[in-house]
Length: 156
DNA sequence: CAAGTGATTAGCT
DNA sequence: GCTAATCACTTGT
Image (cartoon, rainbow, N blue to C red):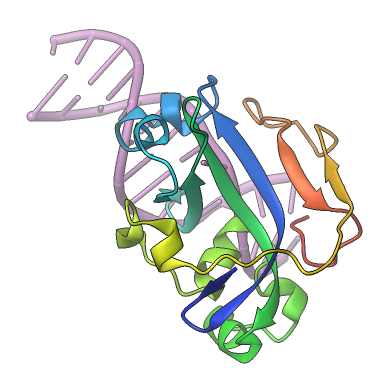
């Protein structure tokens, strides 16, 4: 996935649908686009300091995919500079980090994801781990997390 | 492990 | 309208 010359391999995502924990319900004003659009960008502010980016999806009903982490491959220097870090593994290993690293903007909400980003087919087979294994301590956290097994670039 | 941060929402008035 | 509670996180002790 690329955006403005920077980008990388998506290594972690999380899926949301019309369930009680999704923004379709909990943030229904802005989250409503999960049910009315497909392939659009949905950005939101969380905890007053972090932005996260989703792409609405699922032609069968409300749905969206949260982009959680990428493995930087393009414009690595640019991302490190924007993030103010030196370790590539810290550049985009989390939703808020990814947002900063790619130089995204909250006003992108509603735009066509395929016009704003460039999505490329994967170049290698990957071993995808899913499931509720990660700390479900926080109430309302869904088990629909997908991550590349063994990657150094996923969130903690 | 705790705190910081502000938009959004729910629940009252 | 207003106030309090919530939150799909990151960073620094």
